[in-house]
Amino acid sequence: MDPILLETPRLHLRRMTPDDVPALLRVFGDAEVMRFYPAPFDEARMQRWVAWNQQLDAEHGHGLWAVILRATGECIGDCGLVPQQVDGVAEIEIGYHLRRDLWGQGLATEAALGCLNHGMTTFGYRRFVSLIHPQNTASRRVAEKTGMTLEREVEWRNKPVCVYAVERPAA
Image (tube, rainbow, N blue to C red; front, side, top):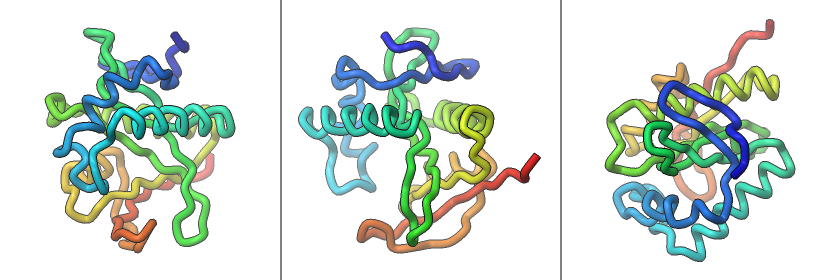
């Protein structure tokens, strides 16, 4: 098992492995979790997602990581730092997806804050965004709780998204 990349009070985050596919499919295969995506994932799509994140991590040192509930050791979703292009500008997105039965407990916010701090301290990033469907009020609240504010709405990958952003001043 890959080492823990970051810890929060209730979570560990580590690189994804193919062994995470069944647990992640409980998140990405849930129609309610994936309401703002074209469709829930099947096993093949989930395998491609894990491979994509492994490739991101190999190329950039980060991607979306497996979120592990410390109390049980189970994989409950993903969260991490994803390089994105928004209106031709390179951005670092904090993305997150958690199992629906754990919503409303602050776990997504905890993971996102951990990733924001990790991105600043480990990678030296100062600016972070989250790209969120305008109707996804729960994800918008998570972004706000991490200190992000709505910067603008754009068309991104043929769909409307709210660009939430936070920028830390240079030290």
